[in-house]
Length: 129
Image (cartoon, rainbow, N blue to C red; front, side, top):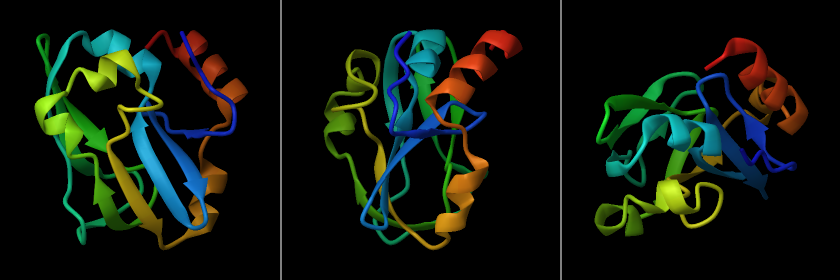
């Protein structure tokens, strides 16, 4: 299981990479592995407000439909439109081509409540999910 450093992680298995006040958000390698083959992604649209810890969309796999939660609060700046035709990017490259949205952060302090790579790795190992 891949857990890149330099990202922040939520307990609901989303990641965020912050650059210049904008957070790129996706699901973790662990999450995509648990979900199986992803067939559809419902994401918020540019201009939509999102709040940390609340649902902002869904990820549908051949097994189940799972909530997509935002690890940060702010306004959606961009949505990865490639996922409409290629939801499998979440399986193939969850930290690269499989990014879901970019959010202009409204509260950078929220990042302090997220886990780093080491903490997330321990969380996954200890929680068994």
